[in-house]
Image: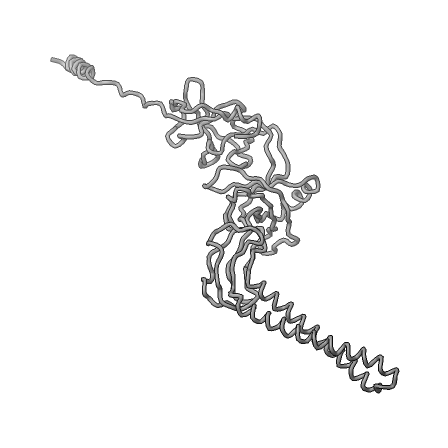
Length: 373
């Protein structure tokens, strides 16, 4: 058998062997979530990180020394203005008040007697029955007794204040902190901290922005009250809005930053002093912006990337130009046209041209007209 026929036989045998093999099945479609690119008016904002501060924070310090008779609050309680917080044993101050009132009563009786004596001698001096020196002495004694009574009244007033100081009330509405002292402890006037009350309705959000943003912020502020929008990273998707109420009068020369404050009603008490938040200071609007969810954008080696859904159910990898972030959305300068559908979830399983199956019903476009999500 020559070589030509040997080759033909081997080819035939190879064909017979391959007939039993199956063609590899294509990979299954990748399930993804999607959203359309939309055109809408977007706020122009200065982004920053900030922290929540109590609107008012007070250390409650006693004005009299004594033993704590009772604590009328529990740690973390919400307290109203003038709510009773702590009672210091009033017994020593009550006794001191009684003694002061008794001295006052005695000295007032003495004053009444000496005043009447001075008046009587004033009448008798004209009759020659009393000398001028006797009258002057009586009048001087009455005047001196008046001073004693005035001093007694001041002592009584102070002792009454001391009795009142034994009942310590909250000067502001707020939330009580942890116990600093316990019932039965002896506290010192104007020294011992009993507790801290933080007012959290409303609250401040403090943040800093670069000094280069100050001119545009001040220009916008001259036109209207500026809105401050915040979100708590990883804890709350809700955007909460307040108003800008403070711009510091000095730029920090070490950092080139200036401090600002927004005031928030915080009616649900969600914002807590010390909490870190993402801040957007709204200084204007940009109409006609092309917007997609931030979750649709992936970082590539040279540019930002998105997967666009094509007719036929495939995903096309495309470079985009992100102009800025706006909360959980991004404003694009190009790469995606309004109405095109982008993948928002499942990006890590995709490659260019991959077959996909959409696992959600996009609602972003429907809500985009009202600017809500």
